[in-house]
Image (cartoon, rainbow, N blue to C red; front, side, top):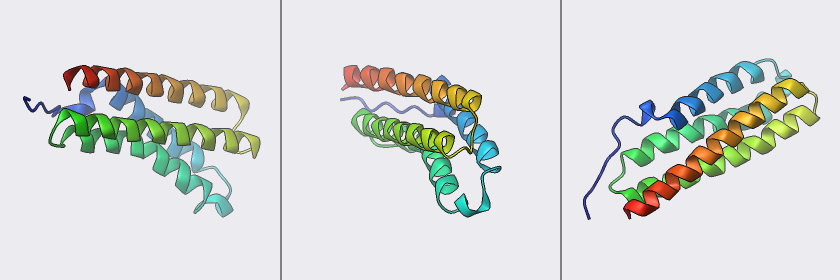
Length: 124
C-alpha cells in the first residue's frame, strides 16, 4: 500500500469552514455569562477547534486508515458541538438566527467529513 499524505489540509474546504466556524464560536461565546466561562464556553470552543485539529493531526499520520479515523473523530466533535449550540440557544445565550446559522454550518461540515471519510475508504 502506498502511503499518501495530505500536507496542505488547511487548503481543504472542510478545514476552511471548520476554522471559520471556530472563530465564530469564539466570538459568540465571548458574550456568554461569566459563570459559563469554564463550562459551556470551554466545551463549545474545544469541540469547535477539535474539528480542524483532528483533520490536521490525521493528515500527518502514517497512512490513510489513520487519517480516516481522525476524520471520524472530527465528525464526532461536530456532533458534540451541535448539541452545545442547541443547549446555548435553550439557555438563552444565542438567538434563533445565530442558532440556525451555526447549526447549518455544522451540518455542512458534518456532511463534508462524511464524504471525505468515504473517499478515504476507497483508498484503503
